[in-house]
Amino acid sequence: MARPRNLRPLPPVLLLLLPLLLLRAGDHLPTEGRLTNSCIQARRKCQANPTCNATYHYLNSCASSISTSSPVEEPLVPEDCMEAAQQLRNSSLMSCTCHRRMKNQATCLDIYWTIHPARSLGDYELDVSPYEDTVTRKPWKMNLSKLNMLIPDSDLCLKFAMLCTLNDKCDRLRKAYGEACSGSRCQRHTCQRQLRAFFEKASEPHSQGLLLCPCAPTDQGCGQRRRNTIAPSCALPSEDPNCLELRHVCVSDPLCRSRLADFQTHCHPMDILGTCATEQSRCLRAYMGLIGTALTPNFVSNINASVALSCTCRGSGNLQEECERLEESFSHNPCLMEAISAKMRFHSQLFSRDWAASTFSVMERQNKNPALRPQPWVPTLFSCTLTLILLSSLW
Image 1: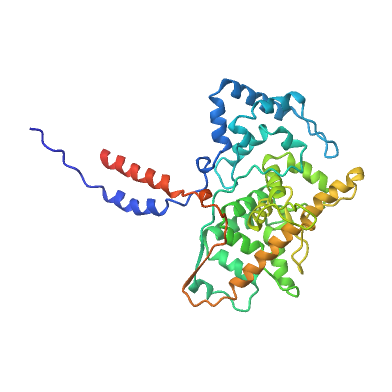
Image 2: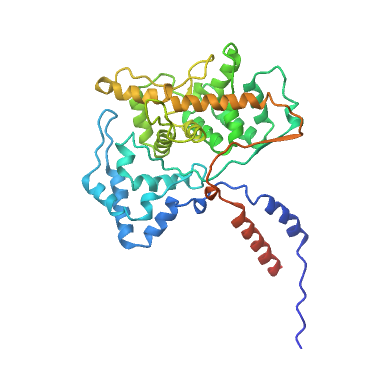
């Protein structure tokens, strides 16, 4: 009679790792698997179909051969390239999307713009964003003991800066772009890359608190801190270029082009009354997504909350009106202005509440449809558990 196999207990190191794995279960960047129809997933499906795969490769060659010449000339997409794009209209590629916090974002956006050649070059006013908002924010929890450390008489921009310092991740990311954007010989591209990393990876409550802190009109010190949040002396050009030239640089880069399309989608007034296309939270996210790109906006002064691009419309010639429309989409955008004002009012209220409880949790309504709220901990928890079972069987 065979002797039963003795089951060996889990090694102590695995028992110690188990709670850590479970605690980390939901703390991941979005992956293409959590999107409804990621362009990376759609591309894999297309590769399995010879016709789809050949058409995609042809479109890819179109994207690399089309010349954008100059910002004053309307780029033309060859007719055969447009016909190739039409052949994919029934493919999942045509409706695929990306997410700004996903891994392999650059690859995803390259696929998106390859299959939308018209959007990538000539159709600047097309309100179609390549991004899909599927990940909701976590509640912002702050201990009362940390709030008590804030100087009562300090302005709110300084308080939000201190809140960032008290958060390890926010402090680390802020120091990274602070170092990259400081010094007389700062590298603008490095500075902008670190700025994008901060606004992509830091929690929204911390990043929005830093950027959109309310200041009294008479408090120029607070206003100056707010303007200097994005290190404009390094992140922005020393001399204002023409706005159309700046846009030309932007649309030549898939990432900047995507952020511009996202901004046009979510901060676009639909009529003369200023009715906005989407909710304010998405407009703010799209606006902040442009920080660290060629079209980085910023506050124009220390005494108000008006924002604008660092460019001019002088020398635009026959395209003067088009240039002014681009400039005014930031400086005179009622959707953006109201979204910024509402967020600043919200931030002001945070520090006027009665802090009777030891902690608080602030979470604004992000998505009214519960079906769009993913539960990222489910697959991660399963994978962690499976890994432990396999390790214990091999021990």
